[in-house]
Each structure stands twice: as C-alpha cells, then as structure tokens.
Image (cartoon, rainbow, N blue to C red; front, side, top):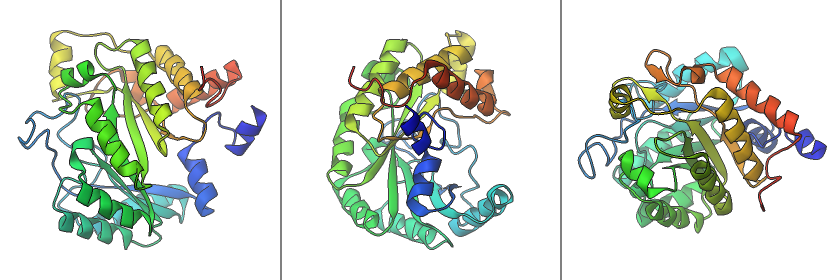
Length: 312
C-alpha cells in the first residue's frame, strides 16, 4: 500500500495530475474548447432531445462560446489558469458536443489549430461511440503517433435498459464496437461513466465499473449524476422525484469502484461539479473539495487503494 501511495503523490489512486507530471516533467492542464459541433442525439439523426441529463451547452457548461475562435478560447483560459498554476503545458480539450461529428476535413482544421497553440503537448477529444467510423479512426491513429491524444468516449452505463431510459440512443455493444476500433489502433481511450442514474442499484453501478476495468482503457472519468435546470431529467425529477445518492453513499461507492479498478488505469475524475447557477440536485455535488476530501479520507480509513480487489 505504501509503495502505491508514494508513487502517486500520497493518493490512493492514479490521478491524471500525477500521470501527466511524470510523463511531461511539469504541470499539465486541460483547456476546454467549444467547437460548436452538435450531436446525432440532438440534430434529428437519432433524436432531438439529447440525453435526458444533458444541458443545452452539450456538457460544455464551463466552455467558451463557439463564436470565439479556438485559439482565442485557449488563450482566454490560459490567462485564467495562469493565475493559479503559473506557466504550464497544455492539452486542448474538445469538450462540448460530439467532437468527431463533422466531416473529416473540418475535424483536421479544428485539431490542427488547437495543437498549434503555445506549449501544447497533446489533445483530448470528447465524443460518442456512434460518431467514429473507420476513416476517422484511421486519422486519429496518425494523430496519436505525433502527439499525446486521448479520445473520451461517453459510456455512462453498461445497462441498455438504463441507456434507453436516459435517451442515450446507442447500446453497450455499439460502445464496444467503437472501443475496439480505437483500441486496435493503439489510441488512448478515456471512458466516462455516471453513478446515480435513475433506476440503477449499487450493484448495477459496480457492474459498470467492473466491466470498464476489464477493458483496461487508458483512463476513466467517474461522474455523479447532476440534475440541471431546463433538461428533460429536471422535468422528470420535478414531476416525480427519484432517489439520489447521498454524499456518504457516493463516497462509499466511489471507494468500492476504485478498489476494483485496474491499478494501471488513470482515474481522471471521481466527481463532477455542476454549474451552481443551474444545479437542482444533489446540492452536495457543488462542494467538490468536500467530496474529494471525503473520498481520500475513506480510502485511508479502509487502508486500501486502487486495484486491491480487481481480481475478486
């Protein structure tokens, strides 16, 4: 246990900060980008409502306006973060929308502009499993050979019944097909999952974490479900409130998931902080520091760490 913690700057799990610092030799921060791309779940190709939890900003609540050039978006965020971190290395993060959902030539221009930004060492691209075809995968393979690329695939849950109820509009098998398409090209993949989705038991959430661990992605992001104003989920919740995880339940669940997660998988995120101006519930998620501290405290109390139960 002590060797694992010493390796990871006192943390009981492998953090993105530690991984990037070890890889690049100094602090690396992500700068979010809004390229103005839509989603097949919103433009009518598959649906017009989007996932029930997704806000009008397409999960880019803290991104800049797409009317601002990519270069200027990056510069504006750099100036803000420089006050906290000083001079750093940067990874532009295409966050809002589905960022492979455009003609390949459009994608190439977007990524090229971002990679030309000063002190950039890589690029992160968030997208959906149904927005990557063979042509795009082949191009991403070439891109990954010249820079540190991570493709962030939203899975959310392995349970198709839940995916249907949140209007995800693709199956777990769809996800696996795209995952393998990228994996066989040696592309780094970050898998997103969400805890607390309506109707899911603790065991269902643990099953999702177990299956993701078996896939051995480059990294994972674990989120708590946020209910945001003006979303389909908000209307459902206001009409018929459903149970949400308490802070204590969430901390226990996250620690259980960390224990079964392969120790070589980077855990980029263990919680998310929604925009306080639009957050309906659970309100405890707005205090990100308390959540992170609670997770660290519980892992130390258990005298446990990432991967200790991965084979159980």
